[in-house]
Image (cartoon, rainbow, N blue to C red; front, side, top):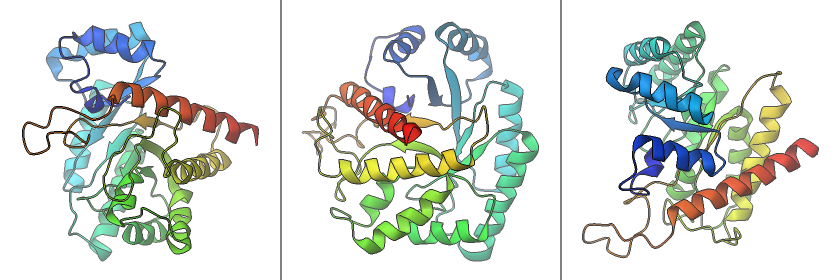
Length: 272
């Protein structure tokens, strides 16, 4: 469960109550941040008490930024993996490829997996550019947040051409962020039974990514799948022009719906 996605779900809850809420809903871990030094012991104690893992997000602009973040993660010592948004959307071509290679090498040396997220406003902000990166950087592994490419491509329907690009991208699946876009909004209600018409596409992509990951996985490897339904303005509200607090969906209910949906997909893929 994304810690960011918990924003506003339990206004008066303590840190431990948030952990308890996540664990009781059946989640295996938290995707968030490296806690500040004064809270480290509390976070470690709660992670152990509730049997949760921790992955964290990094936002480097340079390889030096990433090296410093990896050092901090190593010092904390409880990081399952790092999700990386490279905050250089206008860096392209050879310089971008070089930076991605450097981040991959820094991750390897640190012994902490780091996966580059497919995300608007970052180095991987468009589908075709990111496919070009994976073709040039053999070691590049991605966190697939496909909602960004569906939105950027205004894919309220999915063409055969777009599908081919997605299939190429999914060969580098190392982690996923679960959210659905309808091609017009970044985050939509999938329905209580997943009846949204885009569900069939996201389930196909997620399943294919799972299959690709399994084909190369070794014993003990973990495929992180983060439920990441963001608060407003990601979440659609009825008062967009004002304080943007009244969400049209129950974000916690939707988070659990997505978790159930993805667990069922994982079971099917493993049995296939």
